[in-house]
Image 1 (spheres, rainbow, N blue to C red):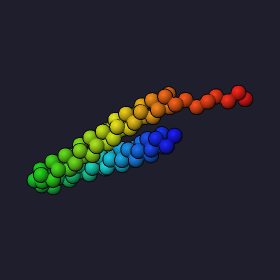
Image 2: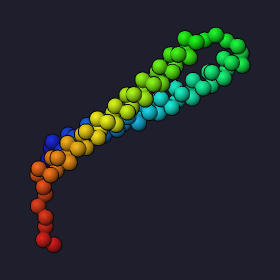
Image 3: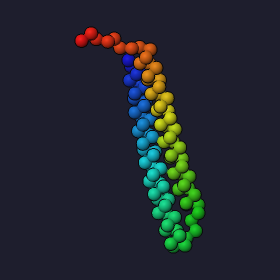
Image 4: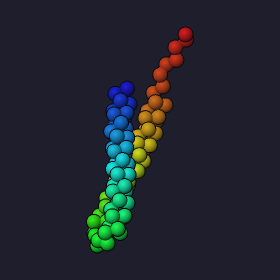
Length: 92
């Protein structure tokens, strides 16, 4: 039973990481779009800043998706543990 609890705890941490990184990705994408509009309106040359924002946005999205994939793997491990050690059925 304690191994199942450890899996659940790890899954909760992965889901938290995935959601946080997805939110960071969306926020960076929003900042990127605003920056693109402002630089176009003000005719500024800030290609490096735009590139860095885009790279950070994509990296946080990749981390988020990786955490979700790892969570799926852990959920299958938890299912396997449950099937190997089924709970007794009560006769109520």
